[in-house]
Image (cartoon, rainbow, N blue to C red):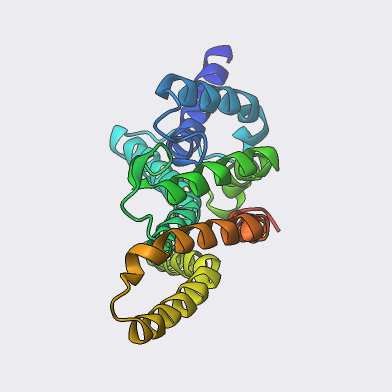
Length: 253
């Protein structure tokens, strides 16, 4: 009996790890490249070790064939990919916002390595991405992500068939919402840039001999950075509320 109990708990542990470990490889803040893989796996293993006794009663028994077991594990990995991508796509809105702001402030060519997006990005985009990660940790939204992963076992019950159509629809909607959020956060800078370029065109008409782009560019950079300093807190508060709304859908009602 003891050996059967150990076998059941081991299967439940690895079944939970298939979903939770996949989420932690993509989760914003924890699943980024600058966090060592060993650290991510250790956190995922620790959480699985804690919650296995709590969820083992609602998990399916170990399938009799290896093919069925592989299909079950693959379905759990798919659910983990889905949850992790929803969080990662939502955070990508800050990358869109920073890129647009850099474009409007003539800083689009000032590039730096972005550890969040894992690619070359503008200075402002990198700053907003890193600030977003810090605020997610400071405001304990990473606890909400972990809670969402655990409570997702009530929403996506292991062993039941997955609705890939719903997965695709939600991911497409999340991409659209993320891009819309990025444009919304940068819309004030778009309006100020529009007013700036209209005034620049009028000035160029009035003074054709004046190299307006060279003379006025420092004012554009200073003005947009000053506007960013004033509006940064409101931008990040709105982003955090949208990120919370994206994660809360996985919580048990």
